[in-house]
Image (tube, rainbow, N blue to C red; front, side):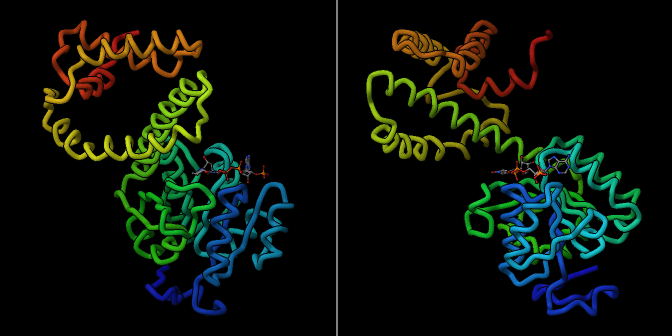
Length: 309
Ligand code: FVH
């Protein structure tokens, strides 16, 4: 099965499909799945939908989708099956309802999960004759189909090549390689950056709010500060790849002192230090292990070699 850049059907079985675009089925119509289905509908692609709770499929049907009554019916309707549900247990439950109808189709699983879960699902799909791509959506539902969205993919390279024009409608595509575990690995790593950023922001806002400063008047200082700090990331990455943790910016010793002030001030302001004490513990351990003159990147080595429990 292959779809060219214009989306013309080239596969034998689908030559009689109405219009020029091969049909797609979207399984799971939560906030994200509904946005994915809407992006395909906007493209003018025949879109069959299924959701465990049928009401959500009816909403999409009112927008032009075909509501399937069963999972097997949804899978039978299209050569491309996009799944986006709560977790991999739900994915497995859904795929097991498909029966033999899965063979010859491509499953693109955009559910958030772990690399091991992605590899297991890929192996299961292969046993059932389906091509498999795992994906990580780096966007919120409102961004789907806009230039700000990108989606990571890994798994079958031929499936990615065949379906890339369709998948581009969801957000720009980034193919990471044949190991299906790569997309969830990068997805979770990028989420780690996001949670770190929000953790820092939330602690900061709690600090200023505790003296009556509105979050809205504080965040204009945060955005340029984060931009300035993120500009150093390529240089940091280069040094880390060279295992070079020396610094001409600020040592662990200096950060240790800064953290004492940070924690003391937070306590004086009456706010919890739960978000920041894990970082302090790592800085303290780095100094205790003799790395006080290194920069903060020494922490990467430390978490890659955790202390035994
Ligand atoms: N929303 C977001 O911003 C993020 C962006 C990045 C990717 N994530 C992941 O996308 C998956 C779905 O997230 P969602 O936001 O669509 O979540 P909900 O709106 O809560 O919808 C969940 C859907 O999953 C269905 N579901 C749950 N359990 C089962 C099951 N056992 N069998 C079949 N379907 C199941 C649920 O169905 P229902 O409750 O309506 O019947 C919804 O369709 C997720 O992995 C995010 O991490 C979103």
